Length: 300
Image (tube, rainbow, N blue to C red; front, side, top):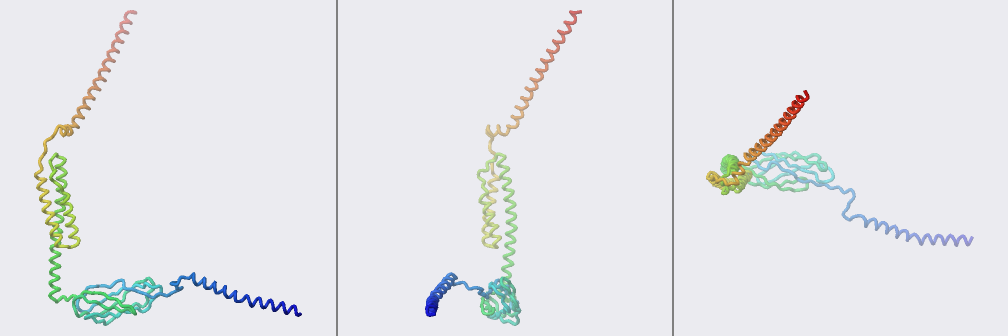
């Protein structure tokens, strides 16, 4: 009985001594697992975020206006009841339509109705929930002198550009005709060494680029230079002199005739040889017939 008690005591002591070791090992395993997890990673983190992707229109007339603010949900969860409070110099809001629900990745519009009282460039303060955005708009007053003058200048600019556009089309057509005439005279042995259309082609491209950009000053300069270059090259081409033909040129031009004559001579010679051979063959045949006839007569 005493021995059994001693054995039980020894086993209990060994188990008690091993418990701290298991606890330390468990702590080490938990530490290793924790260290393997990136510090910046939060499992199932909810991100609520959004941004303004469009704001239309950007130009207004004094009076009642409507803003259309496009909002995109760039977070990973849906957002409810997105409302906009818009303020700015000379602007007052009297109605607003919010976005009731915007899911992740979706876009929708908040509509703001208000009134503008001042012209010029105005910076609007747009507060949507807890975020603030800034947008510049242009406000014009149709009744003001500045607006009337600006409109007249725009109409004048458009009329000038339309005139330049007609001149450009005419210049381009004339260039195409000049290019064809140059090729024709070159093939007809005219001295066109003084004619070079490369600069004219580049100037025409400059005119086209300026028209696309609606740059009146640059278009005017480019088309003036292009017209001067065109008239210069046209005069050079009109004054091109027909060069004298060399023996080689004459031989080249008459190559077809010479080839034709040579072919005809070969054909005649070949025909002569054929007729000659036929004549000789016919003569031989007649001689044979005569000999046969004479031989028959001798037998009789």
